[in-house]
Image (tube, rainbow, N blue to C red; front, side, top):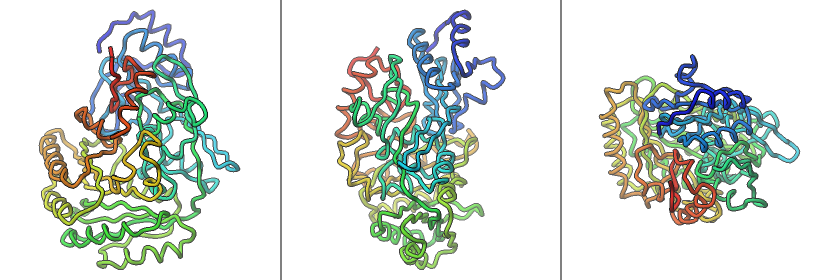
Length: 460
């Protein structure tokens, strides 16, 4: 959306902020507007680098008053790149990194600019953690608002299941607190509904005793044994306890060899107990590498960081939920990975189940509690724009080939920018109509539409 705003109005807005207002001529503009996916190159008219909730409120009101499109950036890591917009206002929360831990009540209050690694380092000082993701550079905000799966999910539920409350600025610039005691409908919606209903400026999480050490790492198998390794993974992962979780991936090693990686994190009562649980995994094959060892939980949260570097690469994702991993699905994945165009690309299973599946489908906006045992993610990453067509085409072909093995659902945090409206509906299933009613109530003009959008019935 293109709009003209007078210099006087912009100056008045700038002086009202505690944080920064960055315009295109600012020396840091090009750096600040960047997001994780290098395919995204958008130029907002204004960027507010918010210092606190007051700046967020002022930014929302300014956007409404001046008919600006609004994008919201916290971590900026989502593949769709919706954190930045052309010609509108980008409300940047990345400098809001405050965190307060109450160890006696096992609660953390965190601002939306926090990254997973930053959050974990603070809570682990007290031997505490909560479910977040598996890449330490990911922002907590978008991950939590979309659901949030991680190593602790099978024991303690998703990140959104561990929310106790949020502070949120709605589309009319109103500041609200949402919990199971006030604004309950809004609290239901932000637990999986993404940024559709407002800008969260504070997350209150329930924490759990974790560590001081966990047993984590990966085993690697050669691609020639991929069929056997994936079948083993299917059977092994179906039998693990709740205090353990897995990721399995087809990827290319740093030496340039395709491999199967089975990644685990055991956070149960003792390392010795974990060694017993992991023995079948470590003995199968045997693997060509066994990189599993006792480590801190903070280290475990970083073991996959190299697979998804902080920025600079072009990326395109497609995703399906799977109820099971069939032999035919395994054969399809192996056949396609043999022709993968980029050594950076991975095909990944992330395991759900356990405590995630024991929550009712309608308890939060995130559904798919029973039909999503595994999240299949095709994570295509490459360096050069000249390779866009080859990588995007390969990803789409594999995604199409895997459709018959999916019950139809998808994890909203994995949706890309070009997804049809039906895929957003697929992300919410039977909860979608209730989310539309909430959108009608809290954002009837669809101010917050640069997201995986739940459209109000009437929008202008």
